[in-house]
Length: 345
Image 1: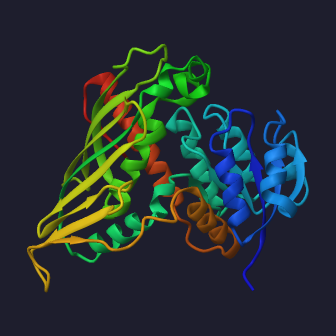
Image 2: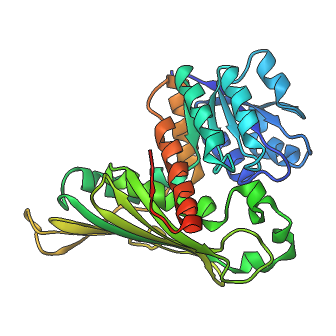
């Protein structure tokens, strides 16, 4: 029988994706029970409806959760500015941690948490949930198998709607303030594609720079537009356009070129993955992946995170990769402010 664990879901009224996390924990077989920390009382009713008998207790403060019988995994979804001390408390109590990104407003606040997690042999997983989407899994296998040869370069964009930025209610949220969120579109959405650039290729971004702007002119002090350039493993080059431009929905695209072909991902389309190779039985023709792009999102990613904590197995994202994604974002911000290329240690 699979191991079953207790999960502490720690949030507040401004917590992001709480509804999705409740659904994910309800669906995760190895999540046996949940303790909800909800100081504002916003999520209690929804938690009872979604979790049913899995909901063991509701608290208004996270500290009692860690004093006696702490959970095996703490799922922390909080305003970025508020998250680091809560993550530290969870790690010091011996919990694995799943953290909604960005989980900090400075990378200097997240690095020591990774050091602590490593020292305690605990997982610290940033919620970069696109990693477990089926087309991403399939694309990574194709690249890792050498189907397109050595990686030469990447071009990516992830574009969301400008409409949300026009709402006065959005202007009051923590996402719209740099001191509370660390940044705008790049740290909230673009970070997913930066992580996938590394995850898909098996390489690391070693240098980065870019530009950021508020092109829509809304009364927010974070960027709604970012254009970044980066180098992988001191070799292949890549670019990312990250912005709030549309009236609705998303445009998303990842193109990777190699020495023996290319791979193209459009995750939100019915045929999300295609590739071309110059070798093998099907050389010189475009191949269309016949799989489905579902299930996707938080439910499969959280399920994998819970499994990793229950079985002490490999997590869907490592401590080092979680930190690397944040280092890359903040390197781009530094490059934008200084006009220089930033070496990422």
